[in-house]
Length: 523
Image (tube, rainbow, N blue to C red; front, side, top):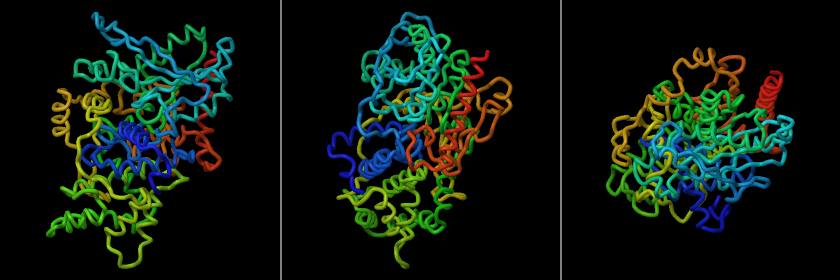
């Protein structure tokens, strides 16, 4: 596939690419955001999938899963940057600091939200409100949760999508530049402040619309899914339930093994093709062997069609790792990127070298390009919103182990990570804060005692499912899993090609939500 297949204007490509880079999140120890050309091509592949209605985010989240610092949800890429029909874009004067009472705390900023009245039955009928808990993305073109729109008519629901503070155009202090000026202006940037934003806005809208008796269900995917679940736990008087899709709420404070993400990626490839898995596993040593020879880096540069001479093998390895991560995370049943790679790798004639097979796998996804730019240049968005969040509270210790994995060892190192955060933002990460604020340890025992009405949905081919809730906690806190599902697939727009198991998962979610609403109206 060529890049021209999806886009005709380079500027538009770059804009979409940079947006996705903000949403994909992978461990900084295993992927660099500086291989712009090859990653851009991969992003275009995912946008092709989106145009086929197979996928739409990067959290979420972003071909490539959750990069430590940036990457989440490539399915956020959409064909355009305008709101879908029937949505109105509005602003609300939001409180800067919900938790303190100094003069600056009462400062306000304009927070954007999109609202859709088309199917709402109205306040007089106590028709429900679906609140999408905005995540690390802009509202412009990023209303990806087609599940809400698909079922709004059935529920006669009002739809509200809120833009997370410090993302898109919802910036305190008047501009992104001012908001990201230093750690003092960024101090109001946290998940707790975001949840309080949603609560304040929801209270305002319910009063304005005389909809105090309308039940509210929160929904989100990836980071937004975590926010939806936490919103239900923190503000149970505001929302009667939450649908949390692909929400890795247990990937904190070493509840989930570091290698969980990489283990699922490995499993996806190994289940697809043992020989493909073995080829990828052996490729890292082959890269090192060639690099160690005279003019080895020059030879690798030629083999992999690099736009400029590789300076080190990590430039190449990180791009390949990123490709495999993303294809696994978004290995949806229609476009099957893992199978595409493995089919190309295995399809080479007997006697083909390991690295030539790897190159065939790359070309099966990104197509043939003039050259691939692996050079290390300055990051265009070195101080992204997700960088700040990870350097403060969202510390997800994701790393790879060489044992039972097709990757080289690259463990998460909190010491080096902290040094990087100190250098960039002059802050120290708080790796235990998320579990302190929202819980996570002994989650079944804790939530069984006081929680209710949360759906945790996960596709088990999504590497982030390793940090998700995969078993029922109680009769009302349930886990819906699909062995062949990928990241956030259940909350994307339905299409005729959806397999029966995906349709069944969505139907189960709808039935549970209907039960919540019926129970609410009976009381």
